[in-house]
Picture 1: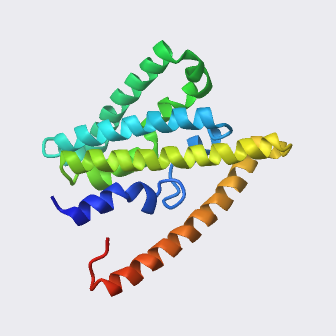
Picture 2: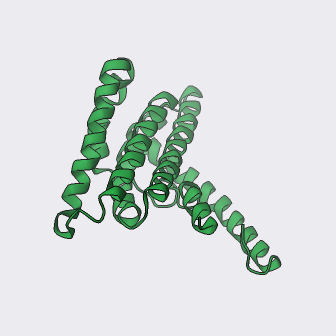
Length: 201
């Protein structure tokens, strides 16, 4: 196993966070981050689809003709989105009532299509599953953090944070904080790389 590639893939959801760094999936991020429950539910649903669509696309990457690559990816992704929708309707009807309208949009979520095209179509099943899990958890954590901050602000009487405008303001501030902290981490990692003779952890 290539440990460097393993670490880069495992940390991808943090170092290349789909929300705070890549700025993908903004529609569900703003729409479903008014509270932690909705954010967690949508994040986990997206993570499930990411992992399993990555696995199947990786398995079929040598079979799918290049000309029908994207339509094939969408069919695979739509299959897992349908399974998630059926599960929510059967076992979690209250959560489905809250986030159900956003579940079908997972099919065209830029995060999932992006990982399918950029990673799963070029890598083995193990790495593709790890990439899906990392990016899925990164997306989920971003939504939960955003939802938690908005809930606190709304509870403090700032009703504007219920709106899309309030969501974008919160997202912008959290994005700035995240990238500031990420910059500190990367500078520290570079310093460690120099002191370790090029062997960065």
